[in-house]
Amino acid sequence: VALRNVLFDVVKRQAKLGDFGMARRGTTYVLKAKERIPIFWAAPELLQSHIHSPPAGVYAYGVFLKELCSPEKPVYEGITNEKVKEQVTSGNLRPRFVEGAPAVLVEIASLCFNQCPTDRPPMIQILRNYLKRRDASARNEAVSRVYGRWSADQEL
Image (cartoon, rainbow, N blue to C red; front, side, top):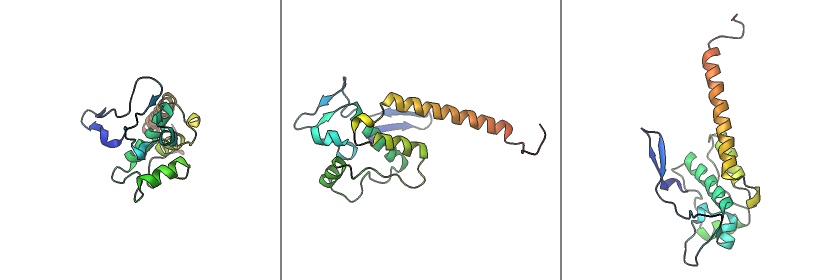
């Protein structure tokens, strides 16, 4: 999923996909000879074998998170598609986050960028971990709102 294919409704706080690209039913998909690969979002194994699988989608999700943090910057700046392909497949190139990007997104993306597809977490695990963090953060924020106005040396 490339950021340019996500339509945001800021009033309703909704996001919708505008292009499903390489999405297919099933677990793997072999690209046809003439099908183009979105180089900047492609996992190393996709660039090598032209086989799209769920772990390749997880890798692309990591790239999406990078785009979300700095939509004005290209994924790879000043580098040719051939060089990207060569460097990504060799494990020497991954998208870089801008300074100040949310740590949770950087952490999730780093898991998505594992060179070995089996080392990448499945999307359901990424979602569960994110929801746990979000819920914990919401609880902490609520507690801070209630108790944050008292200082430690005040009596309750």
